[in-house]
Image 1 (tube, rainbow, N blue to C red):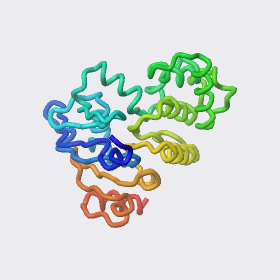
Image 2: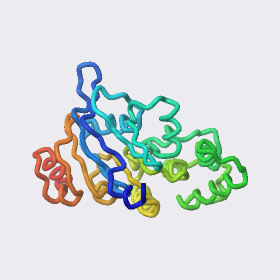
Image 3: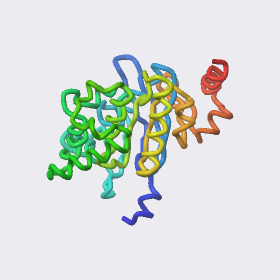
Image 4: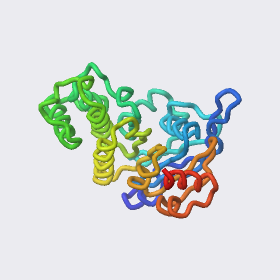
Length: 263
């Protein structure tokens, strides 16, 4: 398949995803598409189902219904939630990545900063130690971590540095899709601003498709091309980010936007 043809089809097609926890419908009939190079924000209050949906798209949770069809670099279409675990792990190391809200969930805290980045390269097949270390050093520089810290463990880093290191670990293999769960949550405002600018720059430079879960509408406006609004497990509104934020149509979207304006 030509590069042009690949750009003309979604990288991810989600249809009818439903997730139940006991008697609770955490996600109900989620349906949307994501295109190569596009950034999609999923917003909503705590408990709206946005993180559950993201974890399902990563293959970490099995849905009760629906499918999430992902198109690999080779043009193969796979249903992520129904992949065999070895195949899911292999694709999660190369084709997509997950940035956790708490960077400690996405890093090995006892392994050096360079080792954290290098591990993903090795998992993707790299074997030359010198090349791996050089690539790790280059990525630390890209996420604004001083090269002298390459052998320091992330447990001695600040929260903002840990999050930047997690981003380097995920992006080093240049995945086609990145899933981010509240990537700036818990950080000081000044650190958030710096991290958001870094994410926007790297995602743009690499042409990565990304899905960002956030409760912060300012984050969505800064980073996302399109937005989904979730309430009680359902997608209640979808559209271009500026369109949804400037002229929300659903009463819940209107409530979210007005609450920010009144804050």
